[in-house]
Image (cartoon, rainbow, N blue to C red):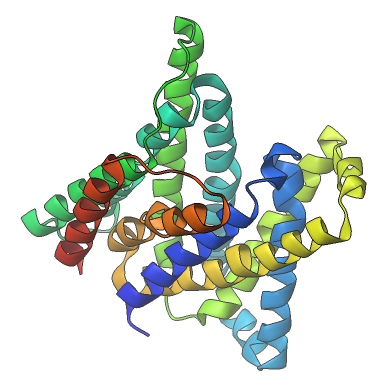
Length: 289
């Protein structure tokens, strides 16, 4: 599978998982919702790893690589997502998402400085088009003004989230070299699941899960398999094939796939900015590819 195809499939899997979780996200906080989802994904990856004999690769992982694997997941999925949730509460989706969407550009810069990745005009143009397109697709009009102190903290949190996501992609690159993608995903997702359950225990919010009906649990399980299971494997595959910079650019197109799903299942109405943003994102993907 080519890296570009893996990246687009990864973005699609994240979009499916996000749309599926839309209603549950209003009922549960992100930690309590993602703890069982990541657990399902992690267990699935562990099962596949052992059933297919990939577990022999665990012994070949060095201590440094293990730190990179787990650290990248905790930095991005733990700290990054937490900061993003904080920014959502402070400044709303209409501001938080566009600000945090600059993470592919930050990833490119970090890749140049820390991984000696080449920086071309084509890559710069591609990342600008993709980021601009994603911002337009996801744009929502502001509904209310926010206090200055709240806005400042929200903007800082959104930028912090972008930085953590970028750092996560950069950290992962040296950790996964030479290793099977499913085996790597089994380590990363399981580590995140354990961390999330720790947060849930500390916040004492696990009891909220008892309120879910069987249909909601089915959504949690399926969403976990698609978003945290398949999505994690495809992201590792994309980084391994293309490097963190291009991987970040391509997988950031998740809103492009979420749009038709939202139209079909959530009955959302797009603005005229959507086709413009889609065109920009597609043009950027062509340049990066």
